Length: 278
Image (cartoon, rainbow, N blue to C red):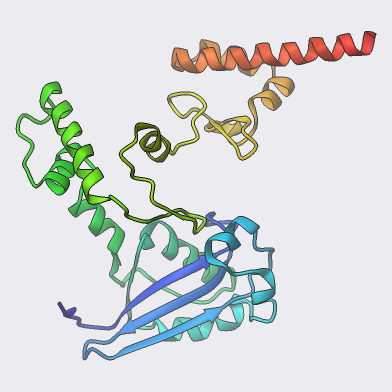
């Protein structure tokens, strides 16, 4: 179906040095401008971000520091980009949460005028998520082509979940999945361990996600002023934080975990002391 447009709409996508709206930088932007008469224009710009591109980002989009070392900084293309987008509505995938804010940050850094207050922004991802809701009722309709009667009754929900899993095995048999690093696999197998490995994708150390594992498999705080710091580092520098957590409104499982970590730290200290005395 052709879009009915009153003014041009610019579909755009960014590649960046990372996922932080404030501290990461744009390294590539591609825009497809569609005019009301159906005419299409596409332009792509490479940008020197002025900071190193981390290996994990390169693994995702394939762009290295050397690929952009001779590219202009964003400030050198900002006016051209703003002019190309002049009078356009905007569209993208996850655009509202990421692409639009990142683009706005870049324009603001180089003091280039770019107003979005009078533009319509279409986020294709949000349309997808709303029309295919990730609820049990939505999944039952999508995979089993049935309406869930007595939704939210334990018996009906349990049986529907069982039927959905069987339908997923049929639908995704031999389907290829590409992860965030570009690696491809066929993970939806009729094997419970394989299904566990694929569906249990979070890095929670506790069950509530208050404590997660970092890339070094160390337990780190996932909230508040110490977010991103390891539990051992926090307890070493601020021992009272353990007492605060134990007295706070945290799940018992989380409290059990931090106690285990504290005892583990004590064991390390005892070992270190014994080694010094030998």
